[in-house]
Image (cartoon, rainbow, N blue to C red; front, side, top):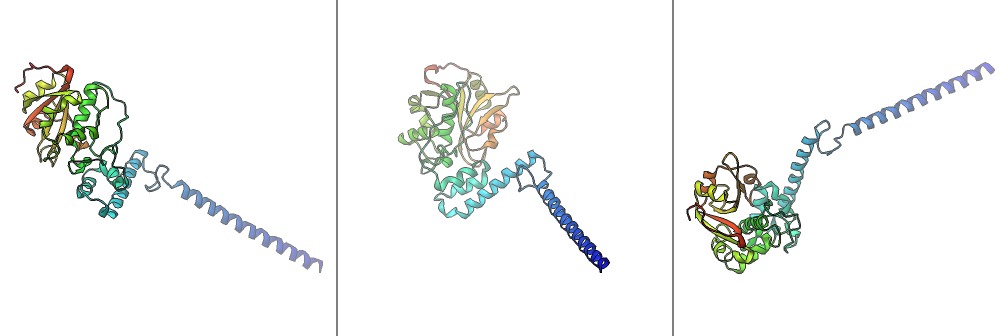
Length: 292
């Protein structure tokens, strides 16, 4: 009887040991599996597979975010009174955030509070949230404001202050009755109204020689480029410098792509009829070698 009892006790103990071993192994498997799952997640963005470099992950994340915003725009397309905004989102990736936020955005202009330095031209775009939603030339300034935006860039570089923004200049153009046309702003504004902005302009025939000669005087050039040249639409651009290789720097308020690389002077000159050299009003002087 005692021997049987001992056998029973030993059997129970063995069974308990087996159960504990099974439970322990199961817990380890679950823990290891959990650790593996955690370790296989991309630490920068979980939407991208683990093991992808941080740089590539961030590039993917940017495109994925844009895709999400495009989906949002598409789902709310009926809330846009101007179809041009939808086309802007499809053609210009940098404008997607602005277009996505547009239905709920304030249509009031905001001040430009970034640092401004005389002699340095800031790179501004028509769809900036601080002014892109303002009405100008019967549309959001994001679509029609290349002239005021290019002028604002030039003025900030020439005078070293941001008292005039694309929105305030757009209002001045509208008040003068010179908003509209294919490029959104009549060239007449440059001859008749600039003094109120503290600027003056001189006009020259657009050719490569004039372009480079006037740039060499240290000023900035405003050009109304025709459709199908730098971009598909007629608009205003600002030429800011001649480079060592004879190319020129173009700041295009409608296209980061155009602004991202230098241009052949003849290509830029052939896109326009006239060149408008901008100077601070108190520094304006004539007598250069370009042909007016």
